[in-house]
Length: 127
Image 1 (tube, rainbow, N blue to C red):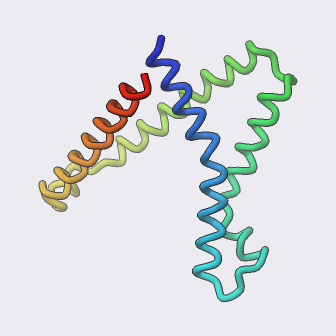
Image 2 (cartoon, rainbow, N blue to C red):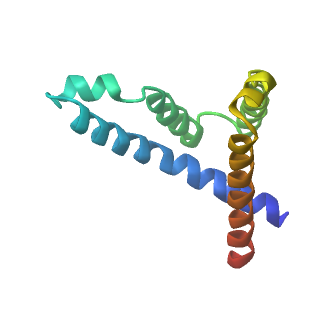
């Protein structure tokens, strides 16, 4: 149960910060790359999916949908999330990984191991 609670807190924090980070990135990118960092340029660089994210968050927290409906939507969301990762996995080409070389693949695996270890240490420290 505790691991599930930490996973929920982590997911909520990540999702809550996503909008602010994306907006900050859009502002920084637009200011750096545009000769005219106006509203039109900002809008063209702004990740529009955030508007859908905010709309869904507002509807989910408004009380309009029943807990059963939210649970069903959550299950569909989980299934679609899983399918997205299956799609990513299917797009991996082992031949291309061989061409890149073992050093690059090893560096990525080492990075994943270090990040996972740091996350585990952080969770243990917080508990």
